Amino acid sequence: MRIAIAGAGIGGLTAALALARAGREVTVFERATALTPVGAGLQLSPNALDVLDRLGVARDLEGRAVPAETVTLRRGSSGRAIARIPVGSQDGRGYLSLLRADLQDALLAGAQAEPRIELRFGHEILAARREPAWVLQFSQDHPAAHCDVLVAADGVHSSIGMLLGGAPARSEGVAAVRLRVRQPASPGIEAWLGARAHAVAYPVAAGRETNLVLIGPDAEVAEAPASFFDGWDKRLLGLIEAGDTLGVWPLLTRTPRWRAPGLAYLGDAAHAMLPYAAQGAAMAIEDGWVLASCLARSPDVERALHDYEAARATRVARVLSRVAFHRRVYHLPAPTSFARDLVLMATPAKRLNRQLAWLYDWRAPPIDFATD
Ligand SMILES: Cc1cc2nc3c(=O)[nH]c(=O)nc-3n(C[C@H](O)[C@H](O)[C@H](O)COP(=O)(O)OP(=O)(O)OC[C@H]3O[C@@H](n4cnc5c(N)ncnc54)[C@H](O)[C@@H]3O)c2cc1C
Image (cartoon, rainbow, N blue to C red; front, top):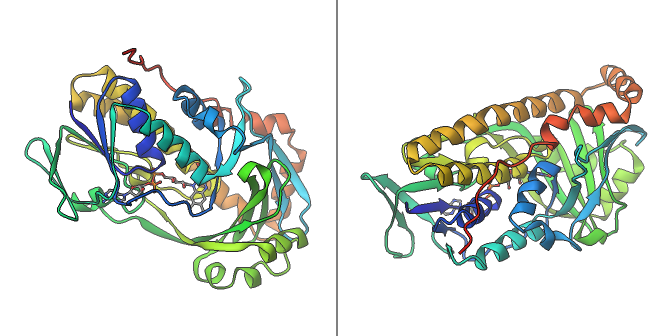
């Protein structure tokens, strides 16, 4: 079975590693000539770390990622803490914050060390057709490639999806401004909640720097983030003032899609979601592992793709409803936000943690690793 993956992002590299460990040969086509870091941060929850640990990638994050014990929710205007939610899993697996580039480096190093993975950078897929094997065509006069299974891990704008007649991702009318603050932060994730907007800060780069994300209405927050957050907690304003803006990300989503004959979608190409539960990359990582386990178990490709969808659709749907819940409650205006804060303040931390057990306690299904 020849397997090709479009995209060497977080989901594509995870899938490649898991497939290779299961004894499958895989080629990854990436349009970029090299993976270039933009300096943005990422939170990684225990469910994603379970996969990275099994792939041997988690140990490479030590010394770069910062363990977090809680997410602290704060009132946007005053900074007053309204909840401290423990984010570990019941079996004691932790939660990390890190530079996205550190995760990508660790995944790439793993893939480069794996003889069953062929990485082809500078290979943008421009055409894909099935006859009945897939024929992939690239830019820059690279010869066409052929495969039996194509994995579209090519991100939110998925060219494979577009080439096959899929709809573009939807705009949600909100944008994220990411800032890199060259100041140390104490461990843990902090989120300030306010009307129509929220902000999240956490340590990255071994705690030497702070990653700050501001999320709010598209045009307003993108144009003048400092003015939009005027009147919010002074500590947040200090971080905005001290930060270097990395860019503005219009937030896009798509209704989940999982497969077509001979093809699997994963990560943002399958189900781009708002980052309100910090689960987009985590779901891409889970998808990559589960797809590999299905392909490794069944020699029948369509059966494997069916099993993949069956395993992932319910889980991702539940994550999407949690994201929708966060969207409603994070951005509440006063006075409804006061009621939210009272409920949160009255809820024991243990209960808040248990409400997330279904998410963080997910564990990857077994894959028999090849021994040769
Ligand atoms: C502001 C913000 C904060 C976030 N915070 C978190 C968080 O804390 N935790 C979390 O889990 N998630 C978070 N996410 C979500 C997370 O970043 C994404 O869900 C994740 O990166 C998706 O990974 P992916 O592998 O699907 O796609 P990507 O990482 O986008 O990779 C796609 C790859 O495909 C390549 N490609 C595209 N087209 C082609 C083509 N035609 N041919 C070949 N290659 C191609 C691209 O160059 C790219 O390398 C956040 C997102 C945003 C916007």
